[in-house]
Image (cartoon, rainbow, N blue to C red; front, side, top):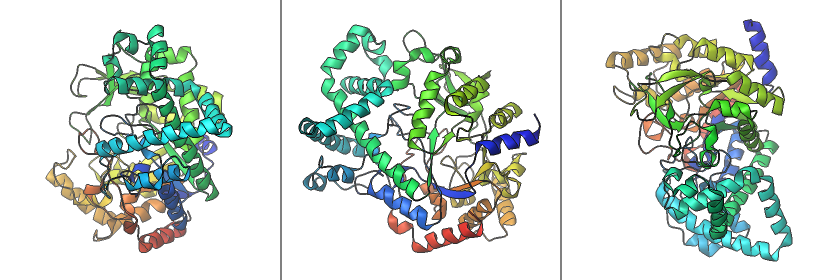
Amino acid sequence: MTTTTSVLSVHSMFSIPRSSGILLHPTSLPGRFGIGEIGPEAHQWLDALHRMGQKLWQMLPLGPTGFGASPYQSLSSFAGNPLMISFDALRNDGVLKPQDLAMIPAFPDHKVDFLAADEVRSAFLKLACQRFMAQCDSSPLLQHAFDAFCERQADWLDDYALFIAIKAEQGGRTWNDWPPELSMRHPEAMADAMVRLSEAIEEVKAQQFFFFRQWQKLHARAQELGISLIGDIPIFTAHDSADVWARPDLFELDERGNPIVVAGVPPDYFSATGQRWGNPLYKWSAHEAEGFAWWKARLRKTLEMVDIVRIDHFRGFAAYWEIPAAEPTAVNGRWVGAPGDALFEALKGEMGEHVPVIAEDLGIITPDVTELRLRHGFPGMKVMQFAFGADTISEDYIPENYPDESVAYTGTHDNDTVQGLFNSGVGDDTTRTAEQVEAERRTILGYTHTDGSDLHWDFIKCVWNSRSRMAVAPVQDLMGLGSESRMNTPGKMGDFWSWRFTWDQLTPDIEAQMLAITREAGR
């Protein structure tokens, strides 16, 4: 296959016009209830994007999070995160009352305290669900809407609701630590649990009804404003999830449900010992045997919610790093081939030739990964921050070298902010030496022809003026924020995913400058 054919293939896949947007996870939105929500504040964010001339809103995975609050370790690949449910919207629906909201304690403005937010919000969500059920009893129309939702989503919702109800009953323990009859889904135990936990199951389903009703309104508003939503699918699922519990046959597990091998990446720029993510790996032969039905359902569900899907760790569809579950780091692993071609052909057979997918192709990318991406017409990612390391392929990340059919970024949720990168030192979450840090700074200043005082704007201008069809910057880079505002540090344990902003940080001057840069770049 020639390069020309490959590029034409990508072009045929991605019909979106030249455009730009901002990376912001909904949990980072302002609001007084402890965490960003998908109600009025999210609609206000859409209005801000519109004022800035942006056509894209990219976010992280939207599923319910477990321990550590990582969106990439979700309790379900299909459910929405109930922590994002808007309390203001529930008040408008009459299932929360003004006096209820007045009782909610104050939370930090610039940070999510996940444990405190979950504890407080769960109590009020429980109250809202109880009132909703009472409303359904007196309103056949509302009951019909709820029943129709549950029926449409039954393929995943029934298992998810039962999983969450049992997990709560079991004190939050991971599913393979439950009594064997529950962890192994013995039919009699399942039937008994559905009766015993019927009220809790209905509450879980009501929460999902709330989430998806609110999300539908948000998505509709985005479409009215001409803004496309970019969602995110982690390639792997969390072990402690409804997905793995419901379909253990699709994963590499032993007879007790424990992972035999786990996912990660080998040592790289970010970490000398690699990253041991701990997700169970797919039993690809089982997926192939049923025509990749689980993957079809997963992608179909995501594309009901968003317009474009970024698939995280795309290289794992060519080959993935397999780590024995007993290994404490990712050093001792091996590359194992994956049936990417068969999977993507099956997905295109289900959804049409032009599946709107962005391939996250960062890190150790071998020719077979690039060939797989090009064969199936998926644009890859270009991150300007990667242009200035000691990496021999850094030329690929200089904006003037980006191909049309790519998505350009100043940085991602896994990067430091632009200002944070420039001001970082030895040992600040990289393997760089003092000489490499200083060389990187000199290279950045030389390339941008600036003194570094407005480096975040310099990066945005470079990325926006590239040939890439789409350009994206994290909202932290619009505001010129430092390392204290980064969203995540790959391979590290810590207080991540919790950053939030307040509306006063998104000043009229920032909005005006963003609009001017966007217009000048023809986006």
